[in-house]
Amino acid sequence: MSRAKPVVNTVAPKAEGLRLRARLRYLYHGSAPPAVRFRLAVIVIDFAIIGFFLAAPILHEAGLVFYVVDYVIAAILATDLAARAYAHTDIKDWLKKPATWIDLFVLATLLFPYWLFNFGFLRLLRLWTLLNSDFFWRTVGHKYDDTRVEEITRALASLVTFVFVVTGFVYATFRDSHEGISGYLDALYFTVATLTTTGFGDITLPGNWGRVLSIVVMLTGITLFLRLAQTIIKPHKIKHDCPTCGLSKHDPDAVHCKACGVVLCIPDEGG
Image (cartoon, rainbow, N blue to C red; front, top):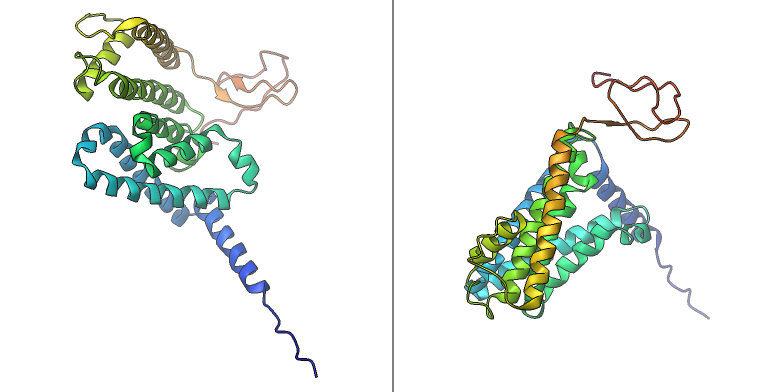
C-alpha cells in the first residue's frame, strides 16, 4: 500500500512575499504620513553616511574602529538597496539606472575597504545621486519640486560633489608622492584654488598628468560654476507638456506655446 505524498504549501510563502513587496512599495513610494516619515528617516541616515564618507580619509587612521563603522554602513546600504530593488516594479529597469550602479560601486568600496580604499573618494557620488533622485524630491522637496529651488539645488549638488570627488582623488593619488599634498586639507585647498582659477601656485601637481588634471579641474569647474550662475539668474520656467508639440518648458504666465502657438492651460501654484 503506497503512502500519500505530503502536500507542500507554496501559497503561504508566495503570499508573504507579495505582502512584503506591497509593504516596501508603500514605504518607498507611498504618500501617506507613515511612508513619508520612513523616507525622511532614510534620507537623514543617508546624509549621516555621506558625512562619514567625507571624513573617511581622516577617520581611516582610527584603524579597527573605522573598519567596524565601514561594515555597519555596508550592511545598512545593502539592506536599503535590496529593499529598493524588491519594491521596484521591474528590477531590470532599476538596474539600468546610473544611480543604481553608483550605489552598487559605493557598496563594493564598503565591503572591500582594504583593497578599494583608494577609490573611496567616489563614495561622495552618493551625494549627487541623493539630491538628484525623485526619492528625495518626493519626500523633502515636494513643495519645491519643478521649481527654481530644485534647479539650484541640483546644480549646487553637482558642483559640491565634483569638488569633493576631485579632492579625494588628489589626496589618494598624490599624498605619498608630492610633498605639497600632506593632508586632506591640502588637497581641498588645491582643488578649490584650481577650480576657481585663482592660481596661487603654492601647491601644484607634478608632471604632465598633474597638469592635465589641473586643466580638467579648471574647465569642469568653470562649466559647473556657469551652470549654477545660469540657474540662479535665468528666468524660471515651469514644466508643462504642450499637448501638440510636446515642448515641456514654458514661462509661468505663458498663454500660448512658443514652439507651435497652441493655447496652453497651465495651472497656477494655488490650483
